[in-house]
Structures are given as C-alpha cells and as structure tokens.
Amino acid sequence: MALAGPAPQGDGSLQKVITTRQFIFMALSSSIGAGLFIATYPSLAVGGPASLLLSFAIVGVAVWITMCALGELSVAFPVSGSFYEYSVRFISPAWGFAMGWNYVINFVFIVVFELVIILQCVQYWDTTKIPVYGLLLIFIAGLILVNAFGAKWYAEAENVFAVCKMSVLTAFIIVAILIVCKAIPSDSRPAEELGFNTWKGGAFKNGPIGFMYVFMAAGMAYGGTEMLGITAAECENPRRVMRLACMIVPARVIWLYLLPILVLGLVLEIPLDASVYSGGISPFVAAMDQARIPILASVFNGIIIIAIFSMANASVFASSRALQAISARGMGPPLFAKIKWGHPIWALALIFLISLLSLVKMAKNGDMVFDWLLALAAGSNYFTWMSICVCHIRLRMAIWRRGLDENDILKWKSPPGIIGSAVAILIFVFGLSAQIVATARSPLPKPPHILSSILGIIVVFVCWAGYMIVRRGVFWIPLDQIDLKIKIEESDASPRRSHDVESGSESIATRCDEITNT
Image (cartoon, rainbow, N blue to C red; front, side, top):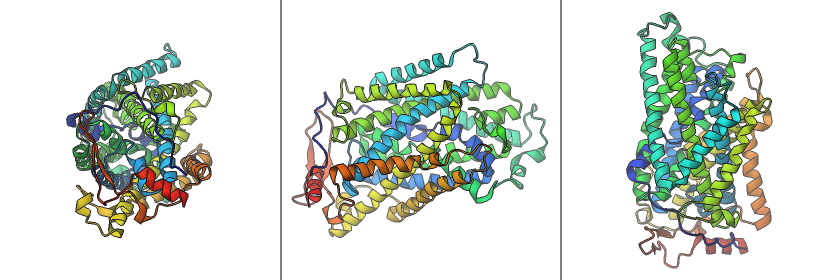
C-alpha cells in the first residue's frame, strides 16, 4: 500500500525570498505571544516565582536541545514541511501523518487563541463604545493584509514586531530593576515587599502541583520556536540559517524569557483567588499598575497587543505552510496543496475562515476558551518537540546500523548530541504528565475540565490510529530501511541535483511502499 497518494500539481512553488537578516530577527523573538505575556499571570499565582522561573529554564534548555536536533536534521535533509517530514522518514508514515495534522490543528487554533487574548487585552482600556466583533474583524483584516504579500513581507513585518517585543521586554527588565531599587517615586510599597523578599514563603506555591501547573504555561510559551524549520524552507540559504538559529535560541531564552520572568517575580505578587482570572491583563502590565505607572502600563499593553498579533500572524504562516506541505504529500485534501502566486492561497483561506471562531469571545463564558486552547497548545508542542528528538536519535542510529561515516551525511552536528535529545524527551514526557496531574488536582478557584489536559493527546492518537487503520501502516520503520538519501534542492532557476549516501538508495515513498506491503 502506498504511503500516500501522489501530490497534486500546484501552480508553482514556495518562493525562497526570506533573507538571513530577516530570519535572525525571527529566530530572536518570533512566536513569543500570549504564552509568555498572558499565561504567566495565573502561573505566578499558582506556582510562585521560583516555580515559574525554574520551569521556564528547564523547558527552555529542552527547546534549545530540540532546535539543535532540528538544525542537524535540516542541514542534512533540507525539506519542505520540516519536522513532520522527518517523522515520516525516520519514525513511520502514520506518526508523520499524526504530527503533521497535530501541528496544523494546533496552530490553526492558536490563531483563534491569540485573537481572543487580543480582545481581552483591549478591554484593559474602556472600549465599551466599540463592538467586539468590529475589533475582531479589524485584527483579522490585518492578518490577511500581512499575509497577502507573501513570505518576504511577512518576514519584514515580523522583523518590526520583533523589535517591539524585544523593546517591551528589555524596558520591563530595566523598569523592574528600578522598582526593586526604590527608584520609582510613585511606587509607595516598602522595600520589604519587593525583590527576593517576595520569595519568602511563596517561592514554590502549592508545592509539586504548583510546579507542574506552570509546566503547561511553559509548554505554551515556547511553542512555535520550531516553526523556524518551516520558515527556513522559504529562506535564501536554509542550511546556513538553521545553524544560526541553534546559536541564537539560547540568547532568546535567557534575554526574552528568563530575565523578564525573574524580575517579574521580584515586583509582582498575585493572590490565588478570583483575581487570578486576569481577564487578559498581562502580568507585565499589572506590575506597572502596582508600581503606579499608568502611562507605562498603557504603553506596555499596546505593545503586548502588537506582540500577540505577531504570534497570530506567525501561526497563520506556520499552519498554512504545514497544511500545504502535508496536502502536497497526499496526506490532506489536494485543494490545500495548490500554490498560486507563491502563496498557499486555499490553505490561507481555510485558516482565516476558522479564525472567525474567535467570535466565541462574545458568548457567555467565552473566556473559558483560554484554558482549553492553552492545554491543547501545550500538549501539541510537547509532542512536536519529542518527535523531533526521536527523529534525531533514529537518524544517528540508522547511520551506525549501516556502518556509515557520520561526516559523509551530517554537515553540522547538534552540540548536545543524542544524549541531549534523550534528556529533552524525558523533560517533555514529564511536561505532558504534569499537565494531566496539575489539571486533575488544580488549586485554581475554578479548575479547568480534566478533558482539557488530554486534548492534545487525543488529537495525536486519533490521527495516528486513523492512519494505521485506513492505510494499514507500519508501527515503526526498521533502522536498516530508513531512507538516508540526501537531496540538495537549490533555487527554482537552478537544476535540482541529489547525492546518494548509499548506492541504490531509494526515495522515501518507495521505501515506505515496500515496508507497508510486507
């Protein structure tokens, strides 16, 4: 049985128009959105500042390891579709199918999630005279406008958004230090209520349960870092930029995640009561309000709305490219594989149509969508990252099994190696488990439904099991049958050429046909 139907012929191909400069800015701050700016509010209340900082540090290290693994894979096997293509090649077609649709579903609904959060953030000001649906349509129109001009202008817009994100987080770090040093005249709080004094007795709130709850926010906050693998497919030099991304991500984690979270815990205390449901107010804005700096709070809120819009924009880009790639492989409707004028227009159309689900915000208890989509995104991210690390380990094992020289295949190697990937997998498994336990024993005044904690697992299992039943796929591709053929694809104007690491190496589709027929 074939792995998938033949890819339909599109009207063109994705254009390689993103420059190295644009990619660097995207590697620094693209995909930073509501996970950091909003979800840290209840996390600080439930887990405390030490739990928040420690969980973000642990997940941050694991995400860096994952990016190194993805970098090694991307340099050796540059493909459109990136990590789920690697799941097909190195794990199994069924798992690749599950990971592809898991990623599409995740980021389609993250678009909805980010739009809902934008509407909540806007409510920080008095917007009663402006209808909610009017604001929503304005932001959706903005997303359409940014994506209408293709990858190059998407990347340019993301560069502008990146500067906004880096500016607001850097400014917050500086202002928070000034608050701790009692250099803000408007802040009347005594020094005993600031700095590490806030950690006394409340550094690890609610013990292990609080720590596990925060892991869900960390899983959401770092989500999208791996979308650099998709973006690289439209870069002028994908191999070079993925190596750069692996070096940039540590600076990103420290500068834009850990330092802001550290100083946030020094200047803001949130009681675990009804106020934990911030209604979309960012903890970074709340910290400015507590310090009685209303003008700066409003400025921060405005820039944070831009940052969340940026995450919605990145999610549109990632989900549309992911949907186009899996459809082109025959794992999705042929319509969504089509490309016109360098854009996956039908995939984009579907995503913008689904984005209208953010109107749920207008319904009674519409804000509850936050908890459900947060859990879905966190679970989905952990699965995506685990799959990348498993692919990395199986690539190395396949090379060793055949007695090949790694240097002939791997032009760049992940510094943490497969030991690092194994450690990252353990962290992600803990994150998935922690999400379920923390939801079941949630200390929140209004605990989320237990089903929300396993939503991401259900999506992956249904996709995987569905493929296994319909296609009668293999559970696991044997190491000696993994395709190690390296295809070096250059620009459309240049002829395509390929290099076989093994003589007689076959294409992945042929390999998997043989496996599934046995």
